[in-house]
Length: 198
Image (cartoon, rainbow, N blue to C red):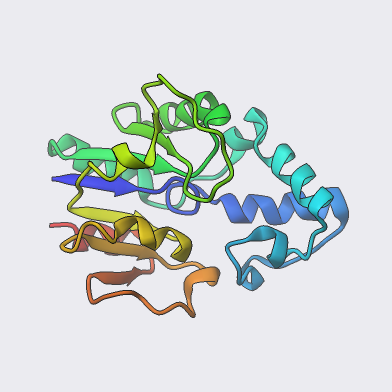
């Protein structure tokens, strides 16, 4: 079985960390449960300059390495790896933070999971001839049985896999979105995800 997992807000608590960063940098306090838009610039009502500054700060290696694990994620992913399933972590993070992202996974016991950077949101220049940057045409050649994702903006990357089961990690910014098909299921925690992956 092949399993796609998004990194941020699926494996780790990225948005929670950014609420702290926005408060510390700009005195902008937005409670996590009020982060209703995946676009943090809109959720925090930032200027372009503030958004760029916050994203730079939040993508420093020391910041990325400090992100807390989403409860239960590592345990469940390691169960799948122990069972021989192929796990691909496909992140929209820029390729420039691959090393810190790989280190976070390794330090949290996910050394066996593959990590790829895919420019999901038009934020990044593609790094050619690397083993971890996926061009869209290469991504679309990949197949998966399950996907774990939180961002409605990423759902379009599953259109080519009509039988894919998409497990949507419950987050404030996806609670009002309509799911594209009956193959999408909201999951309140990783125990629910574990139960649904068969």
